[in-house]
Image 1: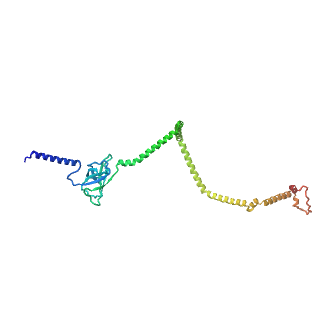
Image 2: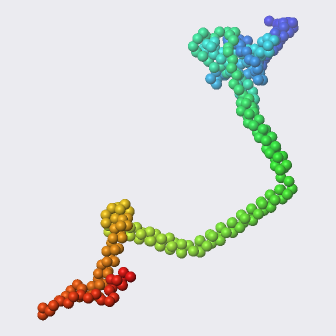
Image 3: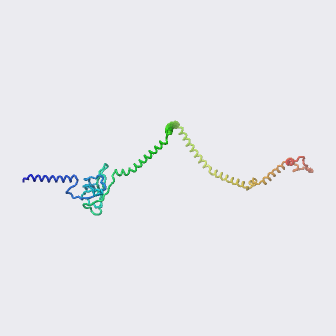
Length: 320
């Protein structure tokens, strides 16, 4: 059958229209012949979300974003997207807007909930927005930057105050002090070097001295053990007991107890003893000078002569 030119032209136009429609659907990542669910989500700010962006569930792509437009005069945005029916979730699920990478780009993912009323076509899901890395960094770094700026301001004020306090003379003195400190550090370094050389040159002597000290310590320990074994502890305890008894005796003497105590505190007894000693001295002196006064021995029965008082009596001499 031979087709006329008009029929051919009509068929070509129809095929062209179909190609345009199919191409438009392909570019929008949608199909006119699929059986997907069309769902809605409302956001205050989509952050650059584009149509054709994939929608995922648990990391698997299950749909695409079909359209983004203003919902009303409030400025809220209505996002239309489609998902296939492979996974049956409920209308309690949420749609999260998140960053797809570090350098930008937004995506949608459904956090499915499987308990409740099953999802239906044209349902509107609840939405959540995950903060982007830049937003988190800005939120975390902003207080730090503010504190840093405040610290810089305080440091600037301190430097101004320091410059106001340090006049030319003070700055000159400060430089001189720093220079003197450098010389001091150099001297200390030289002294440390000399000390190191001294220790190195006398290392053997120091070793011998330490060895001798260790030997002396060992000998002292042995001496201590020997004294302990020899009963030094008992001797010291006995000496302590003796000193305690002596202290008790001295205490009694100070109180006037006993003969020594009375002799030290009773003046009348001291006077009597002194007088008795004086009289005994006189008696012995008189006995030495005049023995006939006390002893008269007659061998042949001769009559005893009467005692005659000498012209100079020792008792009288002593009394005088």
